[in-house]
Length: 146
Image (cartoon, rainbow, N blue to C red):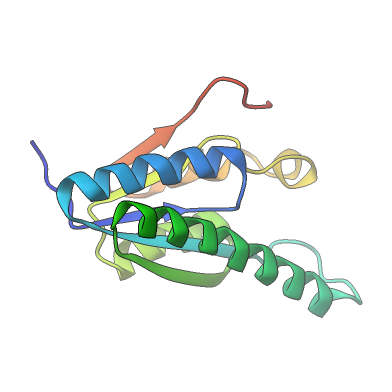
């Protein structure tokens, strides 16, 4: 059976991300691994006159999402490293997996909704799975809005 030392869990604070976090923390607990929690401030939105406000709001959302992963790790006795990056989400996730030397990526499905999902071709999770060489566990679940 494979062992894991570093597990990347990208989060956007959504329910699917929370389910992925639960799986990542559980696996990290079993293997004595560290969880690398990642939030990406999506810079693919068109620039607006209020861009700084949008970025500040995204960063605040990211801090809350990372806090939730850190709390889950603390409750399970698992070390969590927090990372906030800016860029195109799927590209940053793939780069982070390489940068942090992870053995596994754990992602939820359908974390993004609304305009950001409609405007893209394929979900962030689908793109990461296609582009990374790191094994990726995709966590779905009942009750996820399409």
